[in-house]
Amino acid sequence: MTDTLSPRAPRTGRRGSRRWLPAIIAVGVLAAVVVLVLNLFTGALFFYNVDEAIEQRSDLGDDRFTLQGIPIECSITKGTIGDEVVTAFSVSFGGAIVDVVHRGDPAELFKGGVSVVLDGAWVEGDPGVAGFDGLANDGWYYSSDRMRVKHDEDYINEDEYDSRLAESRSQSQIASEVCGT
Image 1 (cartoon, rainbow, N blue to C red):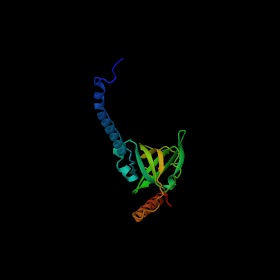
Image 2 (spheres, rainbow, N blue to C red; image 1 turned 90 degrees about the vertical axis):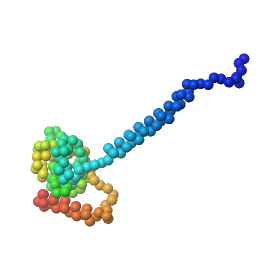
Image 3 (cartoon, rainbow, N blue to C red; image 1 turned 60 degrees about the vertical axis):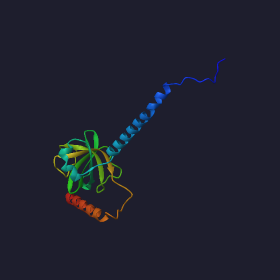
Image 4 (cartoon, one colour; image 1 turned 135 degrees about the horizontal axis):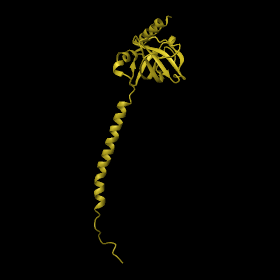
């Protein structure tokens, strides 16, 4: 029979592996923080208003970007490019106008006079949509494949109400002048 109460030799292998555990946890936490920070900075929604997008057209090239503008009612045209059904229209903001060809279904609340946010890129040339002449007529159009209608439940912002109302009237006047109404 062996004596179970006699001292045993210490184990050296386990103690060395525990020494690295805090370092491994610290590296994991640091990696998670870096991923979180990168997602916060790249996940923000940034868009160009129509006038800004035109000013920066050469810098944007054929890169995708997000465009914001107000559709001009009289320009909205359903048409086709080949077998694909598209919606062509012109949007305005800041006194500038851009022609848009949107592939896919338009947003549910899409209509003239209600701001839209579009994802796509500049294309040089004629849109090629039968019945759509475009109002910009500058040899460029914006090809879009994603549309969101800007809408929220905050109908009146008392701090900016007067300036937003004046801007809305200005945009309506531009659309009226372009459409001849």
